Image (cartoon, rainbow, N blue to C red; front, side, top):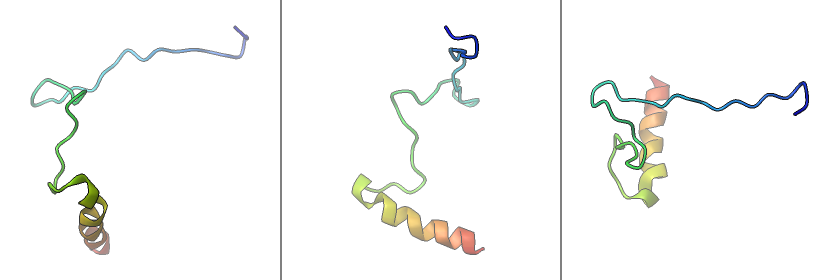
Length: 53
């Protein structure tokens, strides 16, 4: 390898402090359940409302 090139391999993994598991292969449950196709529209209004204060 070149003297100014370094390769690293991460050795950590995220762990949920409540369940002791991670979300690999299961995903994260949405705050607003809806069909995938509707998600951008359903998420936009609450995001704008929160930003508006």
